[in-house]
Structure formats: C-alpha cells, structure tokens
Image 1 (cartoon, rainbow, N blue to C red):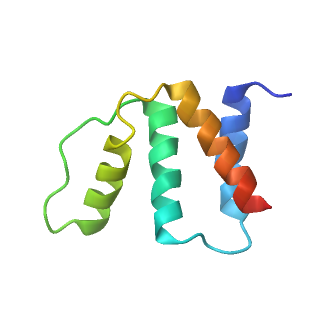
Image 2 (cartoon, rainbow, N blue to C red):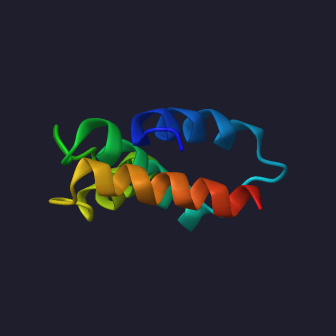
Image 3 (cartoon, rainbow, N blue to C red):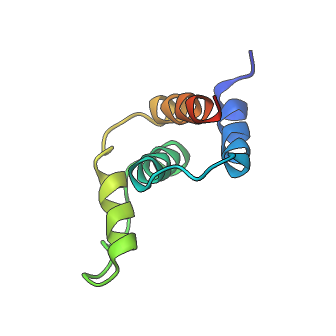
Length: 85
C-alpha cells in the first residue's frame, strides 16, 4: 500500500477526473480536508463579508482546527475514493 503522502497526492489528481461534479457541501469538505492535510490549521485573515465563496472555504477549513494533518489526509483520500466509486 502506498504511503499516506503519496496516496494524498494521487487523490488530489484523481479528484480532477470525476465523472460528475460533487455538490457544494462535498466540495467544501474536500477543500477543507485538503487544506488541513497540506497546510495544517487555518491561517491568514478571514475573507471579507462580500467574498461568499472565500468565506465559506475559510469557515469549512477552520472547523477542522486541531485535526492532525495525517488524519485530514486519510479522510481526504477516503472521500475521494468514495466519490470515484
């Protein structure tokens, strides 16, 4: 079985080839898990009030505050596998 880092990078590539686009909630979950796995806890200022997409992404990522990067990577890989069928 490939190591977690390799599986994480492969999942990030695999997500681009999905047959259909996931719903917005799933996309936010994917984004948050990816960012937490790749960078760790949320950083930087929260986007402005009128940046709805940026704010949604920031808030989804901030909900994972304190989640170990390895756990986020594993959940990301598992979610991508589920979406691929």
